[in-house]
Every structure is written in structure tokens, then in C-alpha cells.
Image 1 (cartoon, rainbow, N blue to C red):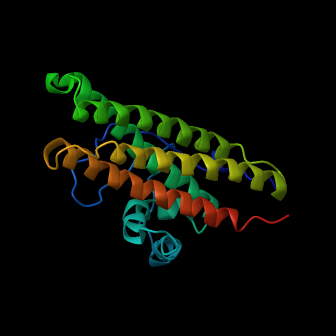
Image 2: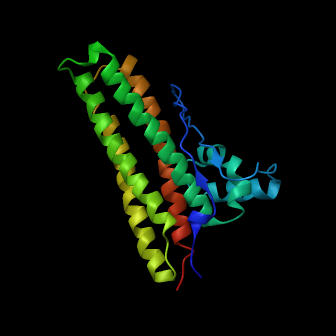
Length: 213
């Protein structure tokens, strides 16, 4: 039976910007094109909780995804799709955040380690956004057979893993930059994005494990 996740739902990227964080935070894109979702039942949210238990950051996973539980409806493919959208949403706004930081603040325009780190973050987050966007496109076009779906999911796994590596590279760029201020702000935000990206990859892996011939 053909897997047609694209016809199930579409998440619209909103304009919410990640708040500064010293702990994990995330922003949730709204679901559009559907009637208002009913209030999640304990069974719906329980599925999210159980699924998130397989991720590295289960509380972040649950808190970022439980509002979509009535859309997911116990479907691991839908859950993986939602999780990628949430990660893409946050990565997109992180890319915009560092871009605006570099463009709007004259103090970052000089040849300093701090300005170089911010510039590098902009570049690697642009790459991460591209990789996640490819993942979304691939998830919307999953094929007819288990073999073809597994192949496509392997692409998604590769791209999501690369996106996570790119996000981590942003933090690596701040080595040698004095603690506090910009470093603390940017790295705190990146950690939050990395958590939802890591969780999305874990849920893609979980979905891939369910696919058989």
C-alpha cells in the first residue's frame, strides 16, 4: 500500500523566534488545512510519550509534539513527519536569528573570532535547513513498496544526521570565544534546536524499523 504522508497534513512554518535559552526551548509551528483538532485524549498523548521515550531528549520530544497527538493518531510515519517539521521550523528561525545578529550589529562586522563564529553559524544553519527541507520533500514522496520506502528513509536519515552535525558545528565555532554574552546566547539556542533535531532523527529511525517488505 502506498505511503502518502503528504495527503495527511502540512505544517506551515510560522514567524515565531526561539527565545533565549539556558535550557532547552522550542517553537511549535501550527498545523493548517484542518478543522480545529479535538482535545487530545490520554491515549493520544500516551502514544507520543511512549514514542518519545525512545529519543535522547524524551521530555523535549513530548513537550514539542504532544499538541499534534490527535493528528498523529498512533502513526509512526506521521509522528516522524511532524517531528521533522518542528525541527525545520526551529532551525529556520535559528538561521534567521544569527543572520540578523551579524547584519544588524556593527560590532560583529570586524575580523574577530566572535564575528567569524556567528558567520559560520549562519552558513551551517543554512545547510541544516536545506537538508531538513530535502527530508520533508522525501517524506512526502514515499513510494509503494517496503524496499523503496526503506531506501527513501535512508536518505532522510542521512540528511537529518548531517543537519544535526551542522548544528553542532555552530557550537564548535565558538571555541576560543570568551564565555558569556553572545556565546552563551547563541549556543543556548543551538542546543535547543539540536534537541528537537536529534529527536526527529530518532523518530525517523523508529519509523524505518517498522517498514517491511
